[in-house]
Length: 253
Ligand code: AMP
Image 1 (tube, protein in one colour):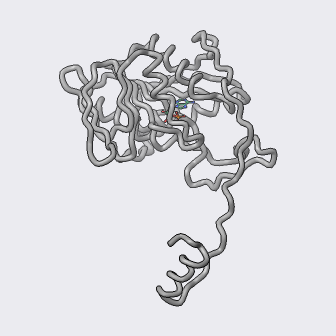
Image 2 (cartoon, protein in one colour; image 1 turned 30 degrees about the horizontal axis):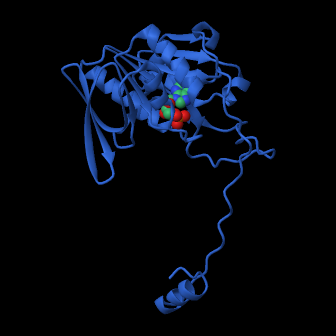
Image 3 (cartoon, protein in one colour; image 1 turned 120 degrees about the vertical axis):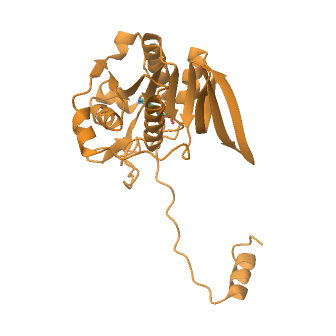
């Protein structure tokens, strides 16, 4: 069984994001980029399935500008066998939306015929939380989102999900789509020898036209603004003063 893992290039989570002066989006020039953290978890899960003898091949795929090759190399250093870049122009990459990515992934699924697609539950840049769900719908495949455990038994995927007040376990036929929650696993670090080996692993480049997919954006971003600045706090002498302030000034009790 092949496992396909879509990985997104995003601003590194340690970077303090700045909004562009024209409010068209966030500043990307000179900013450190990284593999979306939920996608690292997805790669780790796929690699563990291969190590367990369940998956035969792990394919990482990214849609976006040429620089996404860096994140694909990282995915291969973490254990993916090969990679596919669906390459767009830099300008197209900035406005690549979840539906377009899902359509590109669908076209690649039709070519590669994976038994499982494992995506992150969301990309930390735009927090869309849509791509996995759209992909499953387009393919007509079962989906289990926010997975905290994945077990493959007798050709079915059993997925545990953390839901309000407990754990839900679903059983799906395969091929299927899974999206990863934070607690699914703890991704390994890429070792230096594996980083070097990853440079030699195959990386195929396709264009959206090769897949016959229209990636034109369907939504227009009107503006992006910074969150309001936090007001400076005050220190209170004791509980009585705190309660008085909450009652008389904040009027919340
Ligand atoms: P989103 O729906 O944008 O929050 O992203 C959810 C997941 O879809 C991510 O964690 C990735 O696994 C995948 N994904 C989103 N955008 C891309 C992209 N441009 N290339 C590859 N995978 C992507």
